[in-house]
Image (cartoon, rainbow, N blue to C red; front, side, top):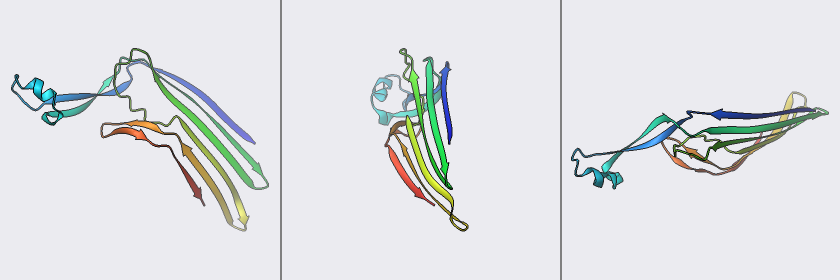
Amino acid sequence: MFVDADLYFNNYRSFIAQANMNVPKTQNTDSIPFALNNKAQQNQYRMWTNSQTKVYNYGASLGVTYTMRGYRLHANTSYAKLRKSANEDGLEDGFNTPEWTVNAMISKEEIIKHIGAGVSWKWQSSFLWQSFLVNGQTPSYNTLDAR
């Protein structure tokens, strides 16, 4: 039996993040307030900048592998979390990582001469995806693979 575990904690200042910039499509100073009230009259940009918010990233993982009579049973899980301090500046961090992932597998190197097989299952929790192209909730999903 083999067990592997880890914990981590990171503390960031000046975390790289993105901010939305809306620039009116008009040069007429009298029309700028109207253009800023209508997204169709704006060019939208996303700029990389450094956040003033303190950002903390922490997590852990645990894996167990057990081998018996040529069979290998393996399972692991990991947890990852990004937390911001209370004085959040509203910038998008783009962490794009599920909080939880779980994997489980059973395999045998040789079921019959020169032929092995295995089945693995993976699940991950839903999470918020943030990027310069799209923002949205990524649903949780699982997969089952056989070889």
